[in-house]
Length: 314
Image 1: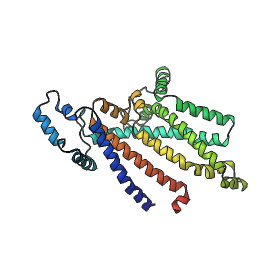
Image 2: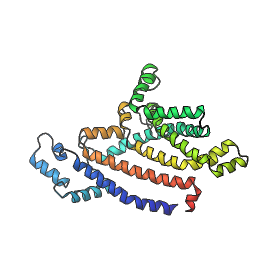
Image 3: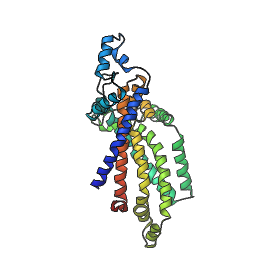
Image 4: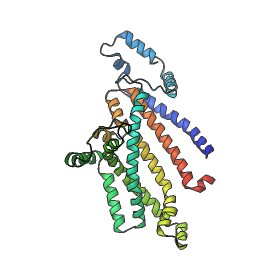
C-alpha cells in the first residue's frame, strides 16, 4: 500500500505543475494591471517601478513563473491587494469554514443518497423506485439559491428555528456553529444526494445481477446481509469516485450558497477577489482547489483497495 501511495504521489507532481501553469496563465489573461491597483490613486512612477521590480514583473513571463512557483513551494502565495494580508493566511482562515460546510453537506448527501439508491435498486419498478427517482430528479432540478431562500423564509423567518445567516466557529460555540451550518449543508447536500442516489442505483442494479449475489442468496443468507455485505460493498467503488469528486467541488467553494447564507468560506472569498481584481487571492484559491482534487483522487484510489481485495492483490 505504501508503494502504491508513493507512485500516486509521483504521478501527482506533474499534474500539480500543469495546474500551476494554468493558474499563472490565468492572471496574465485577466484585464487590468495589478501594479496600478497596488500603487494607489496617486500612482507615483517611483512606486510603480519599485513594485514591478519587487514582484519581478519586468522579467520575461517564464522567469516570472519560476519565481512564483518557487515562492508557492515555500508557502508564499503573495499578498492580497484588498486586505494587504498574505494569501496563505486568508486561505488558512477560510478553508476550515469550507471544510466544515463540505463535511456536513456530504453527511447529508450520504445519509439520503446511499439508502435511497440501495432501496431503489432493490425495489426496482415499484413505487419505492419511482418515488426515489422523482425525489432525485427534484434534487437535481431545484436551484440551490432558490431552495436556500425558501428555507430562510420558512425555517428562519416564519418558524424561527435556525439563524438565517452568519457563521460561528465550532471552537467558540459548537452547537451554535452546527445551527448556522444546518441549512446551507442541507441545501448543498440535497443536490449531492440526488447524484449519489442515481449512481448508487446504477451500480447496485449491475451488482444484484451478478453470480456471487445469487450464490449468497442460495446459501440462505438474509437479504440484509446480501445487500450490505456482498452487493453494496462491491457497488461502492464507482460511488466512491463520485463522492470524492463532489467533495472536491465543495472544497472549491459553494459560491451561491455561501453568498446567500453569508458564510465566510472559499466561495465568498473568491467572489470578492474577482470583483476587486485581487489576482494573488484568485491564483491561491485555484491552486489550492486543484491540489484538493488531486488529494481526493488519491483518497479514492486508497478506498478502492480497501473495498476491493482483488485490487490490493494487483
